[in-house]
Image 1 (cartoon, rainbow, N blue to C red):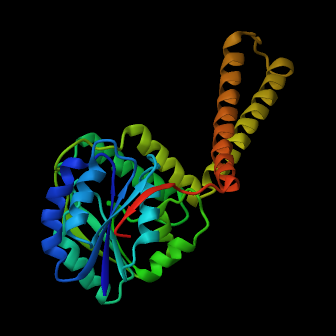
Image 2: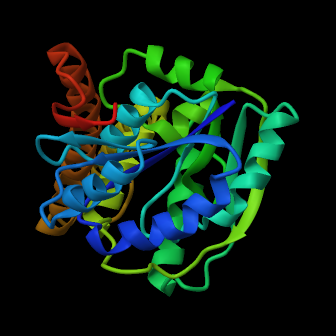
Image 3: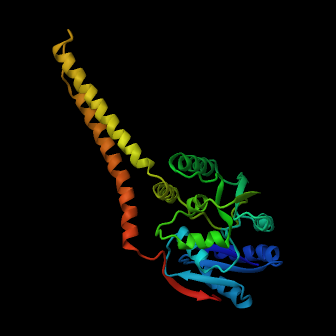
Length: 306
């Protein structure tokens, strides 16, 4: 069997050589290929990969014209990987290659999806661990299909699952959700998350929020329903307030004092509900807009050994 290792890279020049030094001895017992997907790096990363590709034809490079994002790089990796099993991993060595033989064993026993699940992530900051925990809990609360917690994009997929993903027509795919949604037999391999070898993470807080929004709007209509519930709640509160005002004005023996406080609170509440609802609807409309444009996920600059 052929084992494909797909590695998206963006400004990872200091991690390429150490990664290959650690990865190749682990997978050399297999018939393998290593496919680097260069997502518009500007620090000399592709040149370093080309040097290694000249010495080893099983090391391959696919370069984009510009930065299209991590998900687009994974999509390209799945499209060009030729293996019977395809493993995706990051280049910063926080995904340890040592567990790859165990992942292959799980696959050989019948699992179509093998997740690498983080058993410990002590190297991450408190904020990183907190936001990751909130991300998975929020995603699973809002999505119709649960996504395994504490797993990223380090996973093994059978060729059948890869072909399934390639056949999907979506133009802004949320791969973590799509893999779980597919329903193929899955297994887990546990590992301790390691410290990043060099450089800084490219996932800022804003990117994580956008990533979460993409995932939620791709897999659930619950936000739209919540917007509807909020509209009904606001209308109900307004109707109750109107009844109370009428009763207080004509039937109750209490003085009716007019003022700006109630008016201000009511306007702000209704206005806030309307803006939230419009924003939620806008997220879904943007999804429709991207699908209608039918643009490619990426544009290719060059291929090496492909």
